Figure 1 (tube, rainbow, N blue to C red):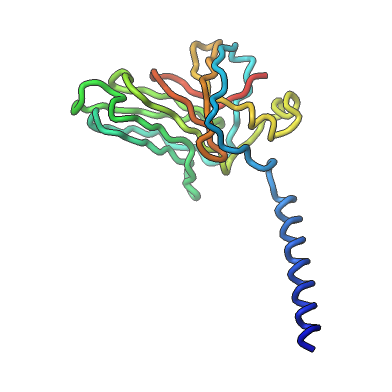
Figure 2 (figure 1 turned 180 degrees about the vertical axis):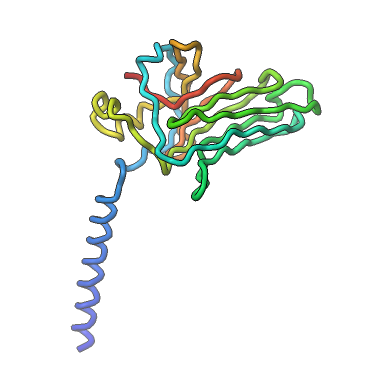
Length: 200
């Protein structure tokens, strides 16, 4: 009798695993995430019309303003709105990011609506190491154009890089890395507009 119970439980466990795999596959919004990597993408300048910006389906992040003493490392975290308040982007400033150590510096971040992008303003020039990291783990939303060009969400995701707006017409795709799954980071040397995008 114990042998029959054991066989029954084993069979039931197998079916539960199969069911979980099917549910997981059906509920997935995109392919498995692209692995983290330390090799940066190449920098290049393109017309803005030649890139596809990653969209977000999540609640809009709020504008953020932070003041702190120059000379100390600082990470500013920008989150999507309620109810989940998931991380949208991080701005990381090293201790030497701003000159005049001890002086107050103000950083203002304005997320761009509907996309993984933001406008950055600082009260002092950026002099040292600083970076922006976009986190799209929850609200990744590939535009229809991306699927036409790349044929899959995974291929579009692999091509993503952070771009700095040069003008209304041009964007510089910066050397970008993947510090973690579902994240893209790039160094920033100036205030301005930054977008997470892939070339067409």
